[in-house]
Length: 227
Image (cartoon, rainbow, N blue to C red):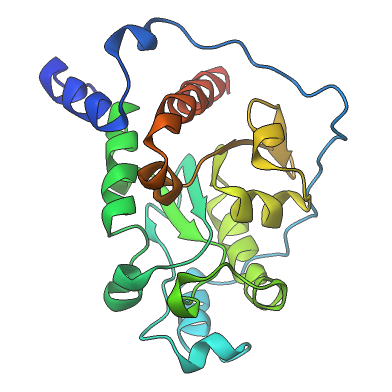
């Protein structure tokens, strides 16, 4: 998608990125003492519509007692790009769609700055139900819900995955390494290139890191262009 320059400037400003920073991609920095990260093989996927029904009726963990509705995902189920966050928030719980609040608006700006439309990519979360009070996902909840995400990935077969935040990165990569050490590395999920960056909600709280997030997105674009 070719964006008009004025519109591209608007979304870059929303990201807090000076225009001159888009002239070249940053150099990838590898963490020398970090062990290689290899994700487990995803299980075989079933029918997409059947999976949606299964998620909608899920009662495998206690989150089903407090949710308004499940949040399956949104976008193109055969997308080349897949963006994965940690869990729905209050707005997502009400609307049944991931990233629709302020964090969603920032994610939209990030996508547009990359030359992407929201409907061209696929957006999902590790958890399909909102944790009460937007607390962090608990290990048992991730364990119960993660197979749904893995089946989504197996169905979509994206060319590149962008993990938004440490919870998504840890769930996919089976690692406890801090986000700072995962960023900038050549990672993969079962052979699919994976880029780790900050969650948009974190960027709203810490706007000074938007520039680092843009570096991750530039790296993601360069990776996709090489595929």
